[in-house]
Length: 427
Ligand code: ADP
Ligand code: ASP
Ligand code: MG
Image (tube, rainbow, N blue to C red; front, side, top):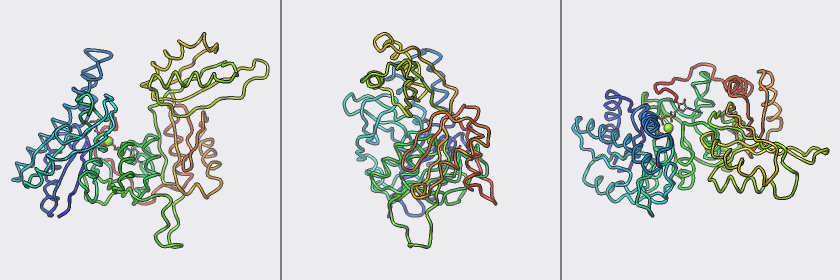
């Protein structure tokens, strides 16, 4: 008898009907002879609603209390799903992240899972129960406080449980039929991928494709857990995330690796430009050391060549816009010390990324990408690349047009079916 780990996202448990539908699906897996462990998200937009409630009483709530509040969302779902299962004549036990043995570091709001000790889960399975675990939360090893894993973190809970329980597969149930070549909410002609490698999925998740939480993909890759991303609203097979871009093709010569896996977009970043930085050794280091000390993660960085007349240069970088104000304050405090001219802040930007392992061996991908964006009348800002990705910053209003044009230019459109979005608000 195998262990199956399933995860149901917020739109899959949005209301009572949805909870009952999910309970039936869980029971089916149990009836098929499996031990079943389920990670659940908060219902619908509950997490956003809780964040708004916090804002209403305090503009900057203490991180510990915010985590206490947010974990309540998943606790509601876990109990309701367990009740709906018991109504079907099966027995289920719900556990908070802490009870389930999800041990994290102590960083509130974006804690990392450092261990899973699933003693209570295995005991409950041995007693014949279906186990329901509240996603997105754990308990800190050092402080013993309750933590959350960051938005979308229930995906990571599921994969961590799958790894700890040595499950054969981790099924992520969501509101679309799998991982598509672009977000189907923007590109209805996007095509479902049958399979995608860990590396390509990592790049997609890191560049805004919120279908999977970035750390869930990192975790799955580290423990070699295949992820099956599929819809909780249909019976269709979804997308298998597994394997590496460096694996040999299954049958040499029969199947050519696709050049492009997909187009991702991200509207969660802002751009800061530090103008007129004196072109001296150590100035860039001073800027970025200060930002690192403020715990800010940067994405793209561009430094222009300095102007001969002034010997000064501009440095631009992107960062999560939630860190924008902290970064501006940190840098403003360095103005006299570094002697730069000014700071510019722009949060009306978006990032469009083209991802695919095949671009390593196909020349002309960048040229085609930039031409497609130009033909759509969109101006390019910053550019960055990795081995299997090219990203550009554009104005936020141009993101959709750039994604659609790129998707078409690389022949990614499906010719027969339109992608279905079954639920969710896309929030
Ligand atoms: P859940 O609540 O199930 O965790 P999410 O809203 O976090 O669901 O993720 C699913 C959403 O991810 C889809 O509804 C879709 O809009 C979005 N998405 C973004 N990029 C992609 C992609 N490449 N393929 C599929 N969905 C994507
Ligand atoms: N409820 C959390 C969120 O909305 C975690 C999750 O759904 O994965 O981000
Ligand atoms: Mg999600």
